[in-house]
Amino acid sequence: MNDVSYLNNQFIIAMPTLADRNFFHTVTFLCQHNEEGALGIVINRAIDMTLGEIFSQMDIKVTVPKAAQQPVYAGGPVQQDRGFVLHTKGGDWNASLAVSDAISLTTSRDILEAIAVGEGPENYFIALGYAGWGEGQLEKEFMENAWLNTPFSSQILFDTPVSQRWSAAADQIGININQLTTPAGHG
Image 1 (cartoon, rainbow, N blue to C red):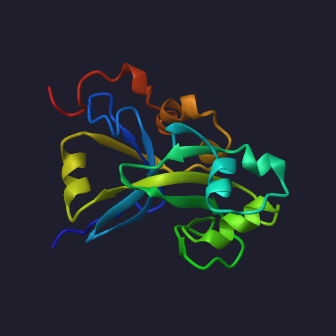
Image 2 (image 1 turned 135 degrees about the vertical axis):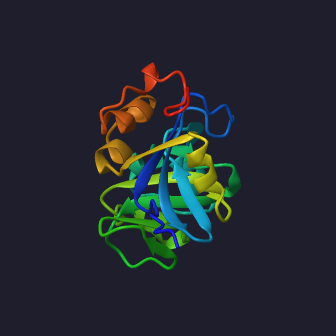
């Protein structure tokens, strides 16, 4: 029996050769990865929307104007009408998944209501949709050299400009992703 290593709480970086338009040059934070599949949030695809628009659509009262100005991201091609909040730990939210000791993924309205009035988590990232893989699918894509995995970094998720996240995630393990032209290990 193989000793399977799951990639929870890690970034997966699309290799330059991955042409799927949903994942071309993306960094995805894996929130859940097990024998049944994987769920991740793409962290470097800003969309033309602010959190204020979501507050308005959900009829959430805003008392912190800065929260309304936060960008919203395309988290992946699945359930693009559903919101996902990656955030630092803290708070007791209705629908949360602890990804690590430091990061959680929350999908309930209560966290947005708290953010709107300045009572939410210290750091947060808002996405619509997620990336999902069925049983064995992500492992197969790794075997095909579609992805590279790197450690999670809160600095990349919360502080690095969106246009630099793809290369910054690869830089963590000493790889200049822009210089990779052929799949590693295949000649």
